[in-house]
Structures are given as C-alpha cells and as structure tokens.
Length: 212
Image (tube, rainbow, N blue to C red; front, side):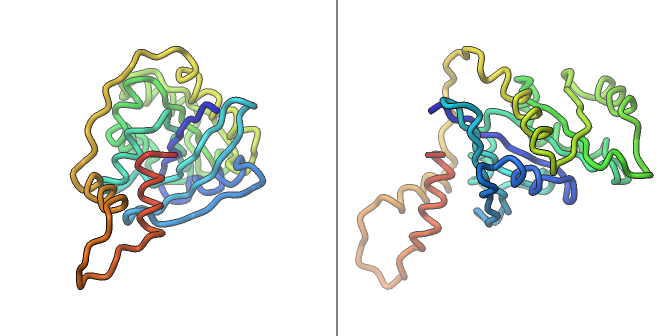
C-alpha cells in the first residue's frame, strides 16, 4: 500500500477539522495533542493501492521538533483559508513561510472556504495576489469543507506530483530531542528513582516520527 502524508493547515475556523472528518474512511477522525501541537488525524483510501494520512494542524506559531519531523515527511500541503477573515492574504503568506519545501516542490493546493459569506474577497483577487506574491503558481479553489467530493478533489490535485517518479532524496538527521525520545522508547529499562515514561505517549511519538 502506497502511503502519502498530507498536511492540512490554516487559521482557526478555516475548516481543517471538518475537512479531515469529511473524507476520513467511515468518518473516523481523531483530535489529539502531539508534542504540544493539536492535530486532527484521519485516513482515506484513495484507491486499492493508495492511502492518504491526513494531519490537520495550525500553521500559526512555531513547531516543536516532533512537529518539524511531521512537516518534513509530508507528501503535500492543503492550505485552508477562511474567506471571512480580515486579511486572508496574510494567512496565505504565513503558510508560504512555514512550508517552503512543499511550495518549492509545487505540492500545494489552496482551498478557500466560506465563499458564500457576505463579506468576501473575489476569487480573482486571490489569484492576482498569489501571482504577485508567491514564488510559484498555486491552484486556488473555492471549497466547502463539509463536502467530501470537494476535499477529495483537492487531495487529488495535491498528490498529482507525488504520483510521478521521484529521484531519491537524502533525509536530514532527526533533531536531537526526537532522537532522544525514540532512543528512550526502545532502550532497556534502568534502575532509577525516576518514574518510567508514559508508554502511550512514546508510542504516539514513535508512530509520528516514523509514520508507520
């Protein structure tokens, strides 16, 4: 089974959680905290041989080492913008800075939600702003985060380049903190007055680091 890891990012209220829930198989999606970062997680089978693991995160603020590993492992990025916000263009600019490697590889699609709101920016203005300010051409699509077909269409666009043969890439070494966490998870226990680590947390970190 070919696995793709897709980050769904955007400001609060843009529809990240709803998008993950709308396409996850059987409606099974979960929300949890991982290394201090809230994550919405779901799985969707794209075909008998392809599966997408979705991670809904906020693109605002800074990420800890666990979050950085998750982001670096991503196959593509779906940015959700809320058309009701005062400056959605600023939100898009922030995400350009947060995920430069995905923008550089053109594995990015932007979904614009709440386009039926009375106070909205026309789609043409989004496209003109992106053309003037982003380093690459980005697809911008009005979507309803509750509509499964809308989100599946965006995922198909995001993963289009991933389905082409790619040259091998040398992975960067894990950050020291992540390496330490994984080492603790597999090392034999030692006699100590310190209470043992939370096995559930270590398992969650292991799965996220190695994305089993």
